[in-house]
Amino acid sequence: MSIVSARMRQVKLSPSVAARIILNQLREEGRRIIDLTIGEPDFTTPAHICDAAHAAMQRGETKYPLSQGTMALRKAAAERIRLDTGIEYPLDQIIVSTGAKQVLYNALTATLEVGDEVIIPAPFWVSYPDMVELGGGVPVTLETHSAANYKITPDALRSAITPRTKWLMLNAPSNPSGAIYDREELLALAGVLREQSHVWLMTDDIYARLTFDGGPATHILQVAPDLADRTLAVNGVSKCYAMTGWRIGYGSGPKDLIKAMAVVQSQSTSGACSISQAAATAALTGPQDCVEAFTRSFKERRDLAMSILTQAPGLTAVAPGGAFYIFPDCSALLCRTAPDGTKIVTDADLVQYILQTTGVALLDGGSYGVPGTFRMSFASAPEEVRAGCEAIKSVCEELTAVPA
Ligand SMILES: Cc1ncc(COP(=O)(O)O)c(C=O)c1O
Image (cartoon, rainbow, N blue to C red):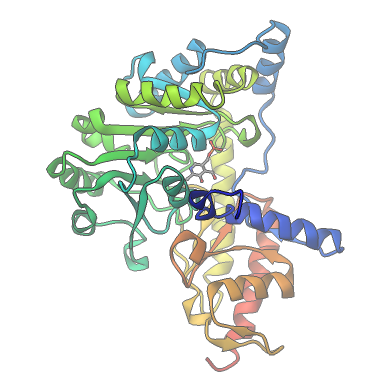
């Protein structure tokens, strides 16, 4: 008999964590690895944010903070949301948690009855289905198509909804595809949600400010403010302020939902680290030029990566509108035997082959719900991005030279 619960046995270790374990092993064996699996900026946290953490420690802000988040940070988050989207939330409609991940987790834990369905468009961030399962819910994958830039359509959404549907998860810019919905697309999706008043909406906006071809991504509540009474918006400081290790995220939504999430939090972590909250307050209220500089740099890396990958035979890559991932379709490279005799049948085989032959680490698209693809992060240093893409291209050339 296993000590591990049946529910827990359904849950996988996050593939990026699993990849990190393998890569560390290879590095210990002396292999040079170019790690393009990482979902975090290579920048250090800006100095004024670190200074704010230091000052908080010196002021003695080292006790338990309010479980739902410090007033200062909730106020800062509310103001940031207002500036970015025009949507206003009172402080009791905001919760601060240990990363956006814990906001999502609290929400699912607080709301799911056993068997409730959560619609998750694929490709999806790898944690969504597992978090839903941990909460006793049923992840319902909603297929999308590369030709539609992996975006869901109103018809597909309508047909995925059942009486058991509790949530639709919407993440834009998307990890892993970088896709962003425009105002018309959001309006059309909002129209479906209006027809289905039992369905709640969880928007994961963690990459909303990291966009490359215009202003920040439009939030669905900007075009459909009437959905606010059944929408939870999730955000955080990890990605746009290079603060992944500080573990601060925040959620805004209806009062009763936030209250229930705060209860989950009070009985699990008691709230996020007080010092990190002071740092995040400085991030959200201080100078924002760091976000602009990071975004510019990611855009340059995207363009660099795309200039190489679009020359790689057998790959089809769409330029991401935001976030820091490229999600190429590699299905034309599968079902081949490499020159060294390796059989490459799935995207996982291809990713493994690229790692073994070139030292470039990627994540297989199957883990993101779309077999025949892979995810490449361009959050690493530009020289690593260039070298990684050149190596991927050379593998594509080698594989397309052998018959399919
Ligand atoms: C789509 C998405 N949501 C949430 C998170 C988690 O963010 P945080 O570091 O704030 O927990 C990530 C991190 O990779 C992500 O890609």
